[in-house]
Length: 178
Image (cartoon, rainbow, N blue to C red; front, top):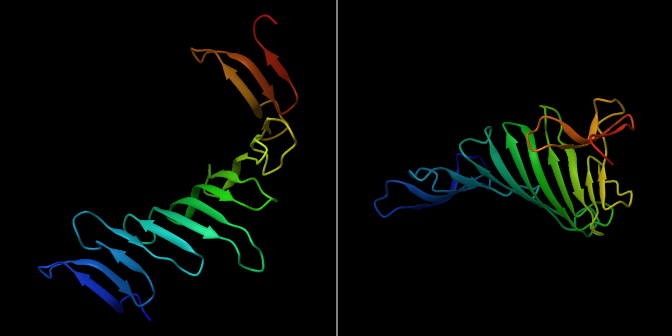
């Protein structure tokens, strides 16, 4: 079956536009030719529903579910934002005990998305910890071990000076009185 094969088509009363069609490849399109825009989505074997602004190769939002497959019993739902074929950001909600239930991923470059922040079942928050819970209520991992790798920075209201800075080389800088 091809995407050009139409299994079902619903048209407006004037028979001038498709309101919905189901293509031979399983994709379901709503309002694909109306002036309100393209609101296409489909569910593939990956259990993903994809919303496109135009064609499949451009920006899109994917809502996906995983779980129960491959002999495991868990549930996962996520929101994935893409720019062409590059994952830009995603939010995952997961029921597995081996991972944080709320995970946020970002892609600062054109490479792979990185685990930016996790919220664990016990209430701890990890920033840059790659799904590792070390027991602190707030855990922040510096990007590296150099003085330029800042793990935590608190600035003044004018954003002209650091009040507190903790860097990857274990240096803590505090301005003013203690």
